[in-house]
Length: 289
Ligand SMILES: [Zn+2]
Image 1 (cartoon, protein in one colour):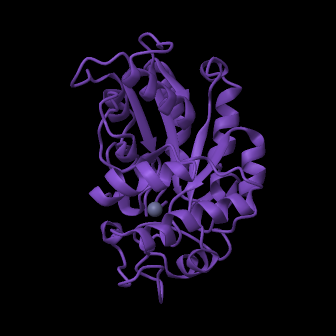
Image 2 (image 1 turned 90 degrees about the vertical axis):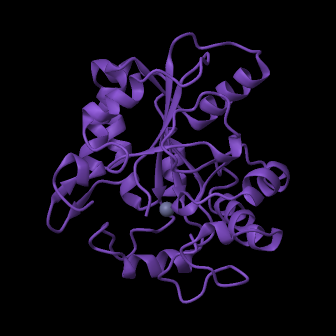
């Protein structure tokens, strides 16, 4: 968050966006329900959701502020995403959203998270010491509102002294192009998150920086990824899901980047799909560092 306004602060935007989604006729669902709908559309079987636009909410990088209110040193008190969702659930629009849920994509490596806390780019975001801890993961899962999923081992983050990659590729996740690097970034992260949550890692992966490549989407994830229990992976391509996409490169719109005003979000949600699917589904991300 870099400012007090909607376009600069996801903690201001999310409460407004929940109402915008409901007013636009969207049905907020978990990633599990979204992927179920894609698979049913593909198989041309199973129950259809009629005209409902399904909307899945995701948050990237996993500061505890996804779950816990906090006080920003300049901007003052901020409502967490989880509590914004709880507030929404008490409202007239929110009480009708029976599937209200979100997914936080977290970075597994404790060392990487500690390094990121001390080296963030203040022009782009705000972090503080300890905020990328993993103590909030299980309590968040226990609410049923926030699932915890895989955003890689160390994000190949440019600030790290070393990263889990054979060629030390930083800042470019497309360089994860072989099984041992993919195991180091994806398998190790799922294992860690499961170890910290008693086996409750949600079976989804979000590509760091949104960077996807053919090796991961067409080879590693459909085989090794599926074998380790993963069901889908998400880029940050701003596209509506129409059921035709590869589940290992599903698009997401990002707040503050692909929409910067509630009316722009409403336009995304009500835009006619390029094809003619049974479901027009949007997956919305809050942030990507
Ligand atoms: Zn990220």
